[in-house]
Each structure stands twice: as structure tokens, then as C-alpha cells.
Image (tube, rainbow, N blue to C red; front, side, top):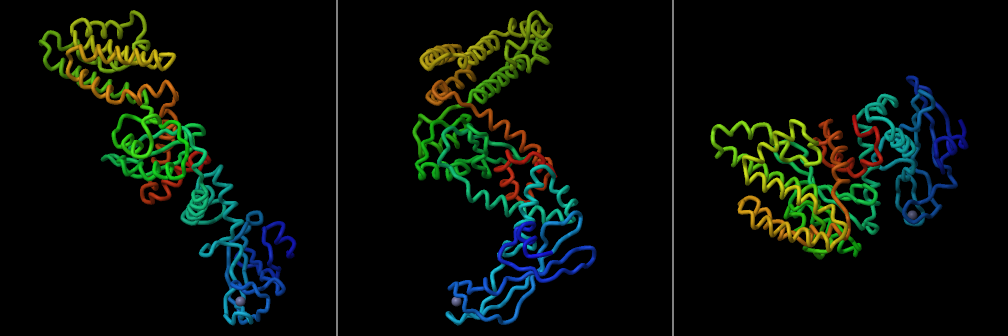
Length: 403
Ligand SMILES: [Zn+2]
């Protein structure tokens, strides 16, 4: 071993090699700062006198399958300029860490392709140690995140636990990165981030979301209506809920001899018409239902017409289509549908904004699926900060998702 190998192989600068010990199959390299490099950590004066020392042992990069430790001889230095006695700062690790920055970087590189458990096993370190290295690195990365470049965002809630525990997730729709994670799905779950965007004068063009009042409420406090785009999949699934309620109401009041017509048709009603092809049995069953029930028939036709809205080529065609649809829905006499039309009318601007910005929350759905994988290993909830950090960097992890 030599000072030069320490430098080139272990990225250790400013220290010189003293000696090597071999204990329990591991290598211990003793190092210290060379005298000419020693200076006062406060005033930088090199007029210092060594007054005793402290030994710190740090795990560093292995050599093959051998563990390697650095035994750092830290000197206490008396500064002749400022008169104080201070311990030299340790330059090769974070203040409280028990391994070097070089090893931490190596762990991070391994985590790109391996699980925490794999890395722990490979290096002979504990799961908790690898995790705390990961947390520290993710935190540092997180502090360096920028928001100035954001233009198109998608917001959605995800259920992380049964019993209505939610996280609010904001995704940069241009690169798929998670830019905000917070607990709950209230106004307060989103507003701090929106406020930050506003304060940093980020020229946001559009934010896709569902019609959940908390979210658009939070956005409207700081931005104009123009940026809000209501996501069409959410709108259709909202309408489908109405259609399903109606189906149950109609089934309950149907005469006994017709009851069977209402059975097992739920998914046929909610599915897009193009997915139920030709003269199949499914189509026949659906037609039979729509034949016997006028209200369901109307509500079903309105669903398909509403879906058609998003096939409109431009803003003005969409505007006409939506307004015609609203007129028909209000005139249909079916209470739940009319109520839904009221809701759409009050969200009209955000629905039509789609035809300007053409964004959806689809990318957030993708993230959602990745989070589900992360969630399956329940450790996330025991340490919510770590769970959130991992969500922020989901795109960079392939394997570290699990374990
Ligand atoms: Zn000094």
C-alpha cells in the first residue's frame, strides 16, 4: 500500500499512508494528514501544534471479497493564531457515518441494479446500514432538486393503505419524474407545492387532475383557471359511477319478471361500446337491458356521447359538443344524470382546457403502479420519510424498488 494507491484506488486525498494491520480477515490501513497539510479548521492558519490524537475507524471500499477499514489518526491541533485547541475535521466521511463517502457512492451504484438485501449481503453489512446510506444520499439529492423547468404537471391521489390513507403525488408530465409527494389528499396536501411554484414564478402551463375540489381549490388560490385540465378518464369513471347507481335503482324498482335482465350486466354498461363487438352474447344481453329500460338506455347513450367529446379535433368543436351534451343531459329527466351535468357545467373551463394543452394524468397512473410494487414491501410505512424519498426517485431505481 502507498499514499498513491490510497489516492487512485480509494479517492483519499490529503492523507498519507502509515501502516497496514490484518485482523479477522480484514485489512486496516492507517492514515493521517501530512504535517504540511495540517491547519486550523477555523482560521486556516498553518501555525498549529499537534496535541494528542483520536483514532476513528471507517469502513471503505473492499478489495475483492476482503473488508477494508481506514484507521484515521486525527490530531488535536493547537492553533497559535486563534489560541484554540481543535480536533481536525474528518474529510472522507459524513460527520456521523461509519463508512467513507467512497463506500457510500459504491453502495448507491450497486443499488441501481440490486436490492438493499443483495447489497447488504454482498458487502457483509446490515440492511439498516445500507438503508441509512440510501436515505442520506436521497436526502442530499432531494435538497438539490429544481422546479424552474416545470411546465406540465399531473396531480393524483393514491391509496397507500386500506382505511383511506392517501398520498398526493405530482408528476412532471414531460419527463415522468415525481416532483411532489405528501400525505393526505386535502387542499393542504398540495398547496405548499403550488405556493412554491408561484413564489419561484415558474411559468406553469397546465396541471392535469380529477375534479376533486381540494386539488383545483389549491391551484386556483395561486394560478388562474387556464392551467387546470380535468382528466378525461376520471370524468368518464365519475360518470360510470352515476350509471351504476342508476342501474341499481332501476333494478330495484323493476318488475319481478324482468329482474334477471339486470343481473351480470354492470361491466357491459360501463365498458366502452367499441369493446363489446358485433352480435356476441354480451352485446345481446346489453341490448336486452337497454330495450327494457328507457332511463338506462338514455344514460348509456349519453355516456358514449360524452366519451366522444375527447375525439373532437379542436377547442371550438369540443365546446359545441360539450354544450350540446349538457343540454341533452339536462333535458333527459334522469335525476342522477342531471346532477352530473351540473357538475360538468361548473367544471366546463377545465374540461375544455384539455383541447388547448392535451394533457392527462396518465403518467401519474404509471407511477401509481410502481408505488404499488414499493408498497408491497410494507417497510415503507414504518418509515414514511424513506418511502417518500423513494417515490421521488422511482425513475432511477430499477431493482432497488424491492427489498
Ligand atoms: Zn486558528
